[in-house]
Length: 380
Ligand SMILES: O=C(O)CCC(=O)C(=O)O
Image 1: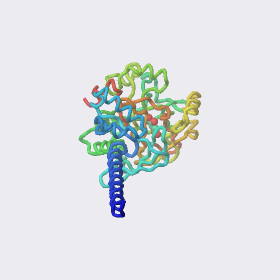
Image 2: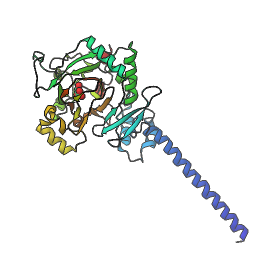
Image 3: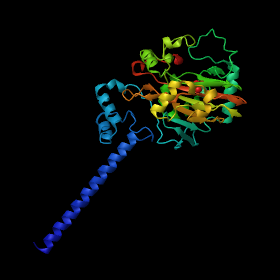
Image 4: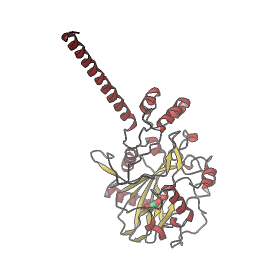
């Protein structure tokens, strides 16, 4: 072979080599781009089930090969049960680690921070969620509505709770409900913020309960509880077939557990003042390994936050305007709606030891798959 021929072959091989390399790079870039658009958009819940991502083959392409079982599983369900496409799925934002700080835009022209306090359940602090003026506005509105002594959900309405005091009383506070009034621009703006913060479909935010405003005086507290369906295995089984309370006319103050279950997927709690001393929101089991959690839960003692405030694994100190947000349930990996209750989400309020404490609870309800199309009784 002549020198010219050898040179010619070598040049051809070099061209082919570069073309092949370019092709591989292009393939890789395209794949990564599409994948990251659909699976990592919110930076938290990898391969979240956006509707785009659920569109047929593209979904398979995006997730299979990434080693994410959930994507594969959802794709299978998607192809067998196309009705799962007809409603909007819940979102579950899981931080990478406690202490992670995530910037969010929940108010035009401003950046807020979500500071992860725990991973299981995901608990986030959001400083300055409400301004000082907004906090004052909520308190004023609550006082005008009329505060009454708090009752436990489903407790006997005949008990005289006004006189109950001391560490053995489960809950000591006063409260009221503020209907989500769409003509109130402040309330509409809070809903906008909750939507942007939680990335939850607007429908679920609109369907949820009125805001609950709570006031604790000195000695006021709320022992550790769950905000939603009872997490004990027997209770869970018993309540499994019940509809969600917000989708029924169950009388809320009478043995409610017999006719409905609470479906508060998430809680967004906002502090309306700085508390002089005490009043932390405490989570006795957050981020505990499963065996330790079961052990502590079995003893039952740790639920008494008047005695065990300092034993809680996470305690959030109230700061005026700050929100704390967490999940009471996992997201059902099959349906994308409300999943199992999270035992780690037990929480409550430690005793206020000086001053007073004001909070607003904003719960976000999500139905189970069987009832996804039932209207909310708060939207009639
Ligand atoms: O006041 C707190 O910090 C907790 C309140 C709470 O757990 C509730 O209202 O369900």
